[in-house]
Image 1: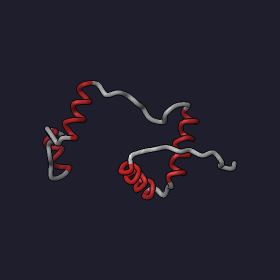
Image 2: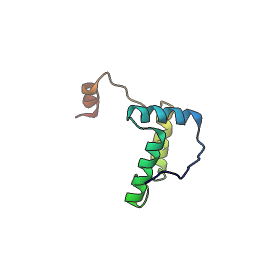
Image 3: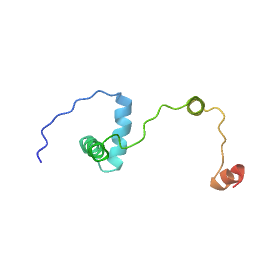
Length: 86
């Protein structure tokens, strides 16, 4: 099928650059990634991932991580498992 429909969208330049680097690593152009997303929306009859508004506890945890508060650092996976009691 010939691709003739055009999509125009605005996004933040920094986000665009970051995402395009990921697409490049995956061997995709932005157009291919958008078409992949559209096909998945069509197949799923909705977004191909869950979209939820985080509850207060999750929202606070996200903010804490973004501000590097309350993080536990480990040298390696073994140290992490030990701190977790696994």
